[in-house]
Image 1 (tube, helix red, strand yellow):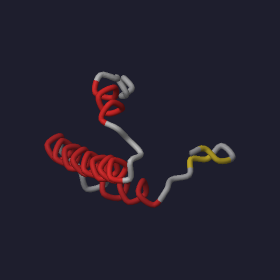
Image 2: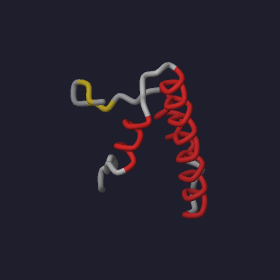
Image 3: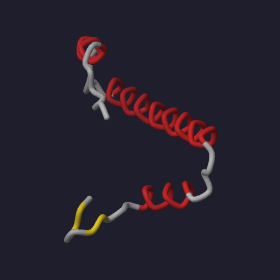
Image 4: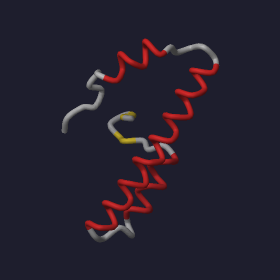
Length: 74
């Protein structure tokens, strides 16, 4: 988030920046990347399950998402 020309970090971003101070090897970065990816995948699965249980998403909608490219390339 940009605010008056300054970057403002949320609490999660600040915590991760502090953690990265100790991350000094490529292997450590890979381990952290895998852990964060797993965490966010689990969070997404929980949200999708909740939406399914509440009838907010259908199998047809999930099937459409399966073939969509949602990630941005860097």
